[in-house]
Image (tube, rainbow, N blue to C red; front, side, top):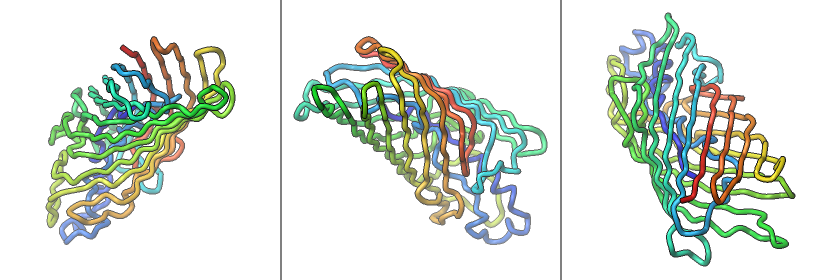
Length: 334
């Protein structure tokens, strides 16, 4: 299913950039390497919120309700070299998000393939604390986050020897900047800009009891003139910014231990395709990169309900606010 959370953390790396600008540099016309990175891709997109058997979904007309609970404990902010930024001392950002998703399948089909529409509304709480002697980032407490919506096609499973062996879904989502956005805060629930977010979700059943799934997503972020807690820098005026495009993917491998219960490995990878832009200028070394891995459990009691539990730990991150992530996904057809 589509994105489960979206939180803007661009002020964090912008502050790190500013900490490297001397008064003499700031007073002159700033080169691209010294322009603060004020508009970045969110690391609150669907990174592992959906997991096992992601390519399968109902083909029957009706409504399915999905609930997500996600906890991020961000205790590190890394730079482009993958090392902790010296601008922050003992960072601690806790983000808790609850999401209600309504997934509706239309009473008409396309050659047996289901046509549907998704809407997701998240509520997010952000808490932040930083040690003395470093940058401080104020959080925007609790608010709605950005709304995600769009159509999808759930394709019929591929059948071999009378059993399903693969299934996939294609969706074209939009993310609207409806979330909480306080210009006096550094950490907001809303991004402040529109995004396109299509994806392909798939599942392959290579052998009895085994499952391999993934969801590959593309994020295109539009320009915006919304920024939070903008710094005052001589000879620099912010006009607009555009976060870079991102390609990212979640993946799982699991083994059914008994009927309706599977255990496995889950992870996700993030690769920003181009640098962020401020006032039309490409900012060097601003691409986000991340790899997370961890264990997960899947409980299948469909058609009544389904449950996924996931833990993700950072393996490698660049230009990223990072730390352990815990997910719960509950599925209930109506």
